[in-house]
Each structure stands twice: as structure tokens, then as C-alpha cells.
Image 1 (cartoon, rainbow, N blue to C red):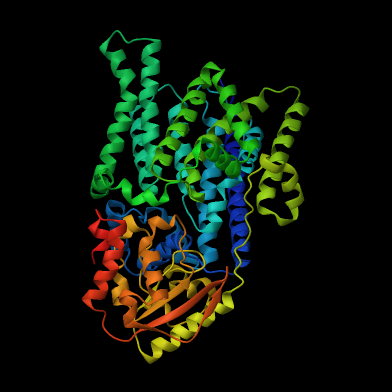
Image 2 (cartoon, rainbow, N blue to C red; image 1 turned 90 degrees about the horizontal axis):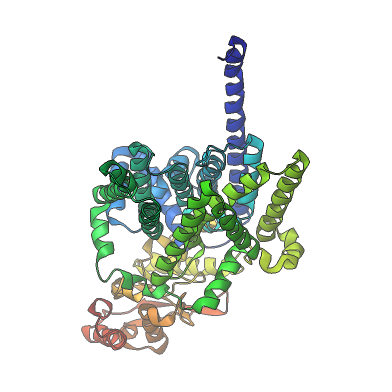
Length: 581
């Protein structure tokens, strides 16, 4: 029986503990936010494509939340049900923008602080309370293991600095892994399984490509069932129900949530032609190329620690399930992903929840069992020190010599504030377009899909540069990817066309003929380009890209459109959506 004195001491102790955790969270939140703000303040560039997409989504959603909150909620719900790029991840960022402004610094800092803190907090929960055998490490050990693990995976932050917000999916993945592996599925409460199913659906909706993660997670639930069934076949109905309840409840809840929130989107994604839209993003590099890509992204040290954690956890009965099934989920996710498309910087988030979970669990158990105490302190110091070196090699310019010495042990990316050295020329181009629009108002079509020149980079130039050019609102949305965007219909509506030489494509040119063929047409003066005249001013952008502006002099004839269609049809004879206006 607990003595009254001890009972009375619990209140202050708990208050102090809660205050300590709150202070830690606040420090992490502020540090991440300050780092992001300072990084963006050092940038001088034009943002484009995914670098600007969710910044603009969040900004627009913040405006509507401030004026029409109900309409904003309806817009979020509609986007979840119908759009590949939905507004769900933008909601907490938009709320932040509503309070403190919609600048680029606010956007990146909000993603870093909100979703970054979520990842750190959920990893700490997994490390401290995620063991199925009731193992509870001391608080300082759990914090140190969490800190070291996060520092060893600097790939967490790179996509955020580039403008992506997929980091939130890593936090959700850590919650799911913790809930599922902290107890035997046969004994876990059904409410918890429902929660896992709901969160799995939320992961799939968070970003399109997280659907691979969700499918792979559901697959390991079935494999877990088969594994446990093989180990002890149930002899009674109650035993049978306990065996199948986890994958059944999780699967039904996940499926029902997806149908309820995003039935139209599900129909589109299950359609036979959906995968073809991403054929341009596929990369065939072979096994050696893919291994090199993994080393370049994560570094040999992080990959080796992940593999060692798998071995460490799999050798213990209480952590065997996590040690065997989490890496299998990661492998299945990878196979599903590369079957459809290659990896951009943000797609590597698909594997970070699993890697953090495995390394965090293994690290805290290993450190906790070291004796004496000074050995534990030395181990923690070595882990945190290695993590600081790895993260520093990616983000700190003054640590470049260390990064060179580390070689493939650390990621090969060097993340620095984006700088363009042709901004003055870009501004001259925009000023010229301003003058033309003032003389003759009309829409502008930009032939290009690279960071050097694209419709997005010019359309959002005022936001990127803090300027007030008049022409960006007149810029039309361009077609970039053949199988995704189809015929460049907006080109027929343009009064002005911005044409680069050479053609600006950011993937295999054969998948971007809706960019290449019209660009060549204007350079050669063929088909619909005959309705335009080249204005006598040339612009030189980075990479020796020469740019001209063409102005329409007359209506485009049906014959000229037919010539452009014939060129596209010769490449895609079976895709009328690409060659037919």
C-alpha cells in the first residue's frame, strides 16, 4: 500500500514531468522554426512546380479560412475526394499563415516546426512507450536516442527546404507503427485497431504516393496473421477471431474511411490508365543504380544502422515482429513505388518512418542495457556526435571538409539556400512582358518546365522575389507531361508565347513532346508559329538558355493547328487526348 507521503509527492512530480516535456517540445519547435526562417531568408531564386504548389495552396486556404471558414472546409473536403494534390496537408499550415502571414519563410517554418515537431514527438513516444514487453527506458535515454536517430537521418529536412510538406506522413507512420507493434494484435482493443485503420487511410490521403505505404502496411498485417497462425493454429472460434481481427478491423476501417472521404479519387486511381499518367516519372537504373541512389540519399552509415537494428530487434522475442515486419513493409513500399515511378526528394519519406522506428527502438534498448553508467553516457555521446556530423555534412557549408572525408558514409546531397544568378535578366523579361501587356492585353504561354524557365516560375515570380510585376497574372497553365496533361490547348489562347532555346524539359524528352514540338515549331517558324512574330529582344537565362517573346499577329488557322496535331500524332498515334485539341 502506498504511503500518504509518497501519494502526496506524486502531484508535484507529475507536474514537473509534464512541464519538462512541454519545455522540450517548445525548444524543438522554436529551433526548427528559426532554422527554417534563416534558411529561406538567405534564398534568392524563383520557385516552381512542387516548390511552390503547397505554398500557394496553403496561402489560398488561409485567405478562405479567414473570410469564409465553412466554404474553406468544403473546399478541403472536395479536394480530398477528387484531387491528387489535396488540401489536407495544408490545413495546419494555413491556420498558421492565418495568424502570422503567408510569406515563404512562414510556410517553410510552419512545415518544419509543426510536422517536424510531430516526427520528433512521435519517435520519442515510440522509443519511450512503444515496446511490447513493457520496457520503459529512462527519460534522458529516450530523449538522447531520439535526438541521435533524427540527426542520423538528415533526409528528413531536405524536402521541407525545397517546399514539400510530406514530412507529416512520417509522423503518422510512426504513430501507426507504435500502436500496432506495442502489443500483441490478438489482445489489442478493437478501438485501437479502428484508430490504426483510420490513420492508415489518412496516410494514403495525405499525399498520393503514400498510398504505396498504406498498401504495404496492410500487406504486412496479413503476413503477420499468417505468421502467427503458422506458429499456433487456432482450435476454437474465439481463437480464430483473435487471429483475424487485427487485419480485418484495420482493413475494413481503412477501406470504409477511403470510400467515405475519397470515393471518386479511388475510382480514378483504380482505373486502368491511371498508372500511364506517371510513365514519364519512371526511371530504369537497374539494381546497381538503385543501390547507388539509396546510398546517395541516406548515406552508408544510416543504412548500416538500419540493417543492424533489424538484426538486433529480430534476435529478441519481444521485438521480433517489429524487426521482421517493418523492414518488409519498407521493401514492399519500395517495390510498389519503383514499379510506377522514380523517386523525387520527397518520396524518400516513404521509408523514413520505418527506418526511424527501427533505429530508435534498437538504440534505446542497446544503450539502456550498457553498464556502467559512464558506458551509457559514452554511447549516447558517440551517437549524438555522429548524428551531428552527418547532419552538419549536409547542411553546414563550413563542414564541407568533414563531409568530403566522410564520403559515402553520409548523404551526398549538400542542402544550401537556393540562389539564381540571372534574377536581373528574369526581371528584365517580366518588365518586357509588362510593357507588352500594357500595350495589348492578352494571355501569356510559357514553353518550358524546368527550374530555369516554366509557367510556374514566372507566374509566381512576384511571390518569390517580393516584386509587383503586372504580367504574372496573365500567364496560362502550360502542358508539361504528355500522358498527364495532353494537348497544349492553352497555347491556342495565347497572345504572347515565351520560347526558350534549347527546349526546357525536366525529364526524358520523349515524354514531354507537348513542350518539345511546339518549342521547335516556334524556333523554325512552322505550323501555328506562323501566326506569331518574334519580338526583337533576347534574354539570356542561366545555363545559356536564350529566350524570346512571340506576339500573335492574326488568328491561328485550323490547318496550322492540324499540322501541330499531326506532329504529336506521329509520336502518340493511339492517344487522341495528346494530339487532338
